[in-house]
Image (cartoon, rainbow, N blue to C red; front, side, top):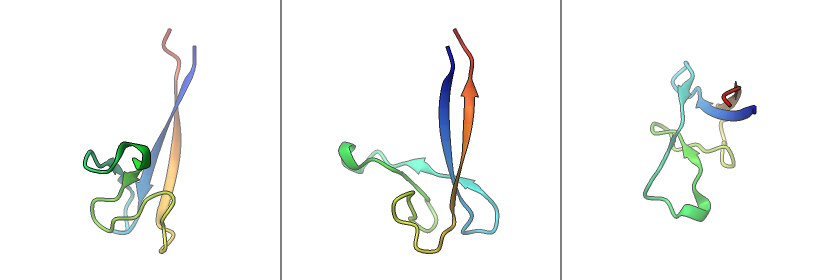
Length: 59
């Protein structure tokens, strides 16, 4: 079975940095957030967010 994992990145520092999930945000609005600039996939005013899909073929 193949599962696809999406990794989000922010390039506000000039290099891609993986976004992290904030455990203090309410669960229904949980989005990965840049620890440096606070950007999220739905709120990216500087257009620094990108993503990469990783496939996992474990059984």
